[in-house]
Amino acid sequence: MKKGFIFDLDGVIVDTAKYHYLAWKKLANELGFEFTKEQNEMFKGVSRRQCLEILLEIGKIEATQKQFDTWMIKKNEDYLKFIANMNASEILPDVPRILEFLKENSIPIALGSASKNARSILEKVGLLHYFKTIVDGNNVTKAKPDPEVFLLAAKELGVKASDCVVFEDAVAGVEAANSAKMTSIGIGDENVLTEAHFNFTDFIGISTNFITNLIEN
Image (tube, rainbow, N blue to C red; front, top):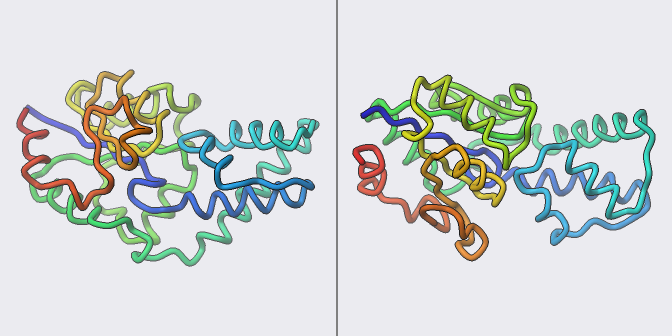
């Protein structure tokens, strides 16, 4: 039975969340208010537009459409400056081991991320060649927990949704995977990712036997 594996990007393959936080914090400070790491948790797995809407609510700021669009662009420009020097050292522990194992077993791999910079990030850290397809914020119109990103990834892999395995670090991402009838694997705090079918703190705890069982069952 053919299986497909889909990976989120931020917090699963690389830790770009810190750079998103710095860019949002910079914008908040320029708009005259503070933005904390605790508040940043609300941004996990959320589109840039929705993040800005939440940020403006936190700062109690009303914006014209022109201001909103300008701040969207500014945040991304700041983020791109932060990630410009990313390299393989940014890859989270043991991710390459799992990607290599899947590649050796001819299992198709997709990226399913809200990020619009996913491809360039994968290029910078040297992992792009593992992925058969990239589905990101440039391809979808609906943000997680809508399953659109994962359903499109499955379609491009040529694999049934029910035969796909998704690695996610965000509640919205786990909900999206479950909604798509896929097997969800939470990477992070199991007390937060309670709806995931399986939970691991990171990829270090994922054995090749576990992956093999997912492939065969």
